[in-house]
Figure 1 (cartoon, rainbow, N blue to C red):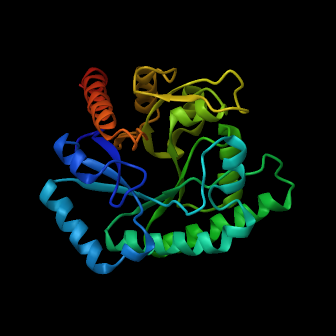
Figure 2 (tube, rainbow, N blue to C red):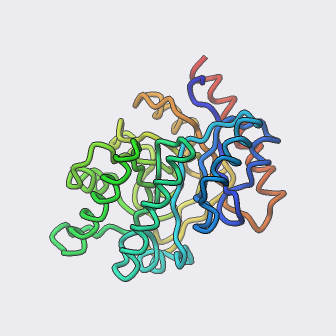
Figure 3 (cartoon, rainbow, N blue to C red):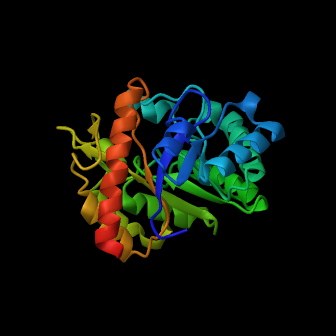
Length: 281
């Protein structure tokens, strides 16, 4: 596949991401998949899904885990509910991520990804060590399936993320870089962060956002690609500089407005294609 194939974030059952048919209609050749519900993660369904991908000429590049009870209502709620950080749901969610890894293996996919949650900035806290340990366990399980684990950016600064990955000491732990999340969470200028993270970035989202009036305290605002403060051309230029040649996966989470979502994804794909031609050809 050519450098920087366009991608889109999808789901099979209702939830995050557009339906596979939208990717097909828009002639988008790669997808990341939001992991389907546990009851549907069967060998039979994996086989059917792979046949569908083959018919549509679409390549699956990553499977994202998500969990019941997660809420992105506001930043404090994310702290309490998202990922493997919250202690009361950690064991159950780790088990689910292992199952998602096994299902992804059935799909022939060598990348699983997730929002880990808010890793404590204070590395002396017991919670920090616990999150390092649970991440190691997940990485080791993924390794048995010949998979990498990609952590989605947003909740941490680039420096914190680099420190966390170094402390985890696993060679299959990498980053899914989302520039808009840096703005939404108020954790740093995305282009600067991307330069710092460099070759640890192995998958990306193409998403745009506006800074909040109180970065880090209240949400920024997600907007259509090219209308925010990421600077998409600078983003792609920096991806080129760090040697990233993988998919440019569009994420636009407005499932309550499917037609607008489809139009904005189509617009984003056109924008990325024109920038790709300008920067790579």
